[in-house]
Image (cartoon, rainbow, N blue to C red; front, side, top):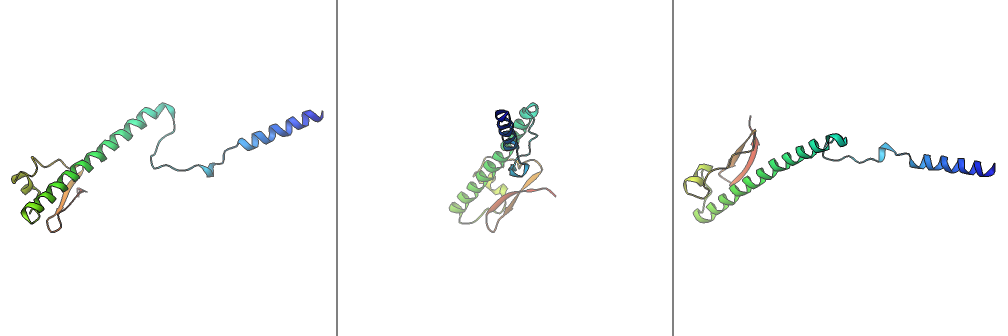
Amino acid sequence: MKLASYLMALSFLLVAGCKKDASTATATNEPTSGNPLTAPVDYMGAVVEAKKRAEKVVDSTTLSQAIQLFYAQEDRFPRDLNELVSKRYVAALPAAPAGQTWAYNPQTGEIKAVRQP
């Protein structure tokens, strides 16, 4: 009888100790459903977003480097982005990311992608 009560107390402690506290869970930046059935869809969505972000960075870096090269050789920033093409610093202007356009400041040579109004 004494052994049975010890086993009952031990099993109670194990069950109580295994209970997860929802407040200790950490939030992630990526919204996922957590469902194994939708994991391939969640993964592909993350891949597409990463591809878009990488293309934006590569295109803006390419333009920024062309602007800096123009400045080094011409001792001024280009008046507009088309001047980079006409003077053959780039073959063609890369397309801005979907829903965005290139914003260029000819005084500072700064370029960035901004949302279209």
